[in-house]
Image: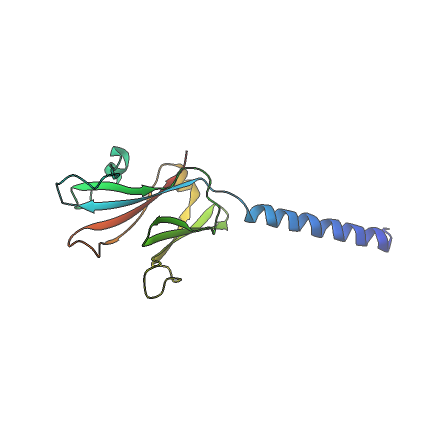
Length: 158
């Protein structure tokens, strides 16, 4: 039989291990890449610094109506710390929350809206699907140009 001191020591060790595992899990980095994309029928040259969307991603959205897609900004495809906001533009921030069990929650925010702390949209993503080549696409109408759209692509980073 274990003495009360050994039981207490075992209890403390178990608590410290659980705390360490919880802290490690909270700091897990997920390699996701986000791209803010502009969809338009405008045939003029895009603004300087915009890149054409890759043919791989274009194929995944071929059912959408716009003729041209330009990457406005992309995050590096390195690790993303969950919960840390990522700025794609002055009106598009996103945050990633690790839900555990291979799922993340991606929320898009507009810091210039009437309610900047409320997400414009939130989606739950399965990391396994993204690892298999699936892409999560958020989309909305452009407030600046009639008949244009914005899209945010979420993919697994390199």
